[in-house]
Image (tube, rainbow, N blue to C red):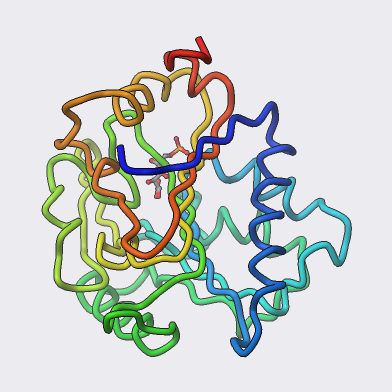
Length: 245
Ligand code: 6PG
């Protein structure tokens, strides 16, 4: 695995505090830029951490200066239990005073190919460009036990190297259609954080962090070109790594 920082946190609160520190630190450095552009993933891991983030003392994070985008979205309506937007809305957005104009959700209810094109164009329009590629300040990724990240899975790992900013993916088991940002956008970010918790992730974390051959895993392709990679984990997720066992 490329150069990375490994943070092992004892709780959801500690993980939220670390994320909060990254966000406030970047907000302090905003200088001429008006906003901090963050892309969030779905799944169960971030939910508890986002709740803690939104429980933080009012004012710790100036959410007016933060704009939220999504790493990926399931092709379902925004009020569907499966919706990543719904999860972030319930666990974070509803608890903070973030203006609606700062929220750029992927429209899971739209026709997938058209929405992938729309979101790809939106990213190029709304974000600063580096090497003509949209550049997020922070991309928060999850990790599946199969080594998927965003909604790029081992069976369609080629999506990671798509020339487009976004792609239409399918879940390998459910066949559910998803819209995802691609590797060119992920690896163009200033900060990429893998948010990983739980014993069930220990093996894939071991393979990715200390393994030799892991090229079939999309997560192994996350190598920020002009940015930093951080693994923000709990003790269970690193329990198979020497020194943490
Ligand atoms: C999604 C996510 C996906 C997720 C991983 C881990 O839409 O589900 O973007 O990539 O981050 O599957 O999910 P858990 O946090 O639920 O383990």
